[in-house]
Length: 138
Length: 143
Image (cartoon, each protein chain N blue to C red):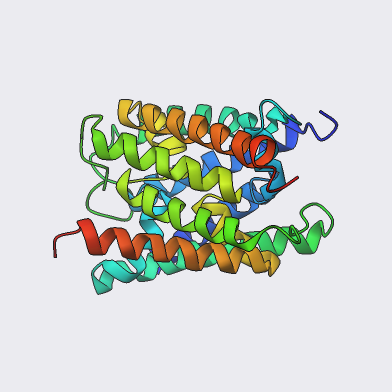
């Protein structure tokens, strides 16, 4: 129960953060990426706000033997930079530049009853599905 | 640069930093949103509830924010839907292939000093910038 409450609160905080920073505003995102046009560098400050908090806290938290409400930390495995990372990140960036949405803002935008968010969430899941069909061994 | 908004962007970023901190501290999970989304249909049954709650929280957070500040974010109108849908497909496909998106790599991964995540984030941005250049200034598909 506690676990569920904390998870919901974390989602709400994240959603408010994406709203306040305007990451959920696709024009703001595209203007951030438009370095030769109407460039608006605001969104780099989202990372500058998030990273110091996360860097300091992660370092301290990962010294613990376990999280407070679970038996172990579930971190990504230590993989190296490989072809799928480079290709996947480039494909992602192309889609981000075409749409102005990454997955977090796409879901979060549903809270504004935005039609674009519905299109984004469906097409992102379609991308997941096709990738999983081709590359995931069941 | 009339819409430059560094303070609200930074404050929003700090909230995101607090969110990923609490999630890791209490549940041991990394707040990578594409991974959380993908797992809704692919993870073990016991592993699905927290994912739905986190995603519901995102939606609820935006909804609450919109109630308090209704004119802060207005949904975009009349964007070419083919560009949107194709973009969404590539975002989903690419996030699976790169094993993460901007939250997982750009925030959590970089905070954990992962070289993979730093490389991924640089590529997200350079590919995004190149694409916006082509869409807006070469093909002129959107304003």
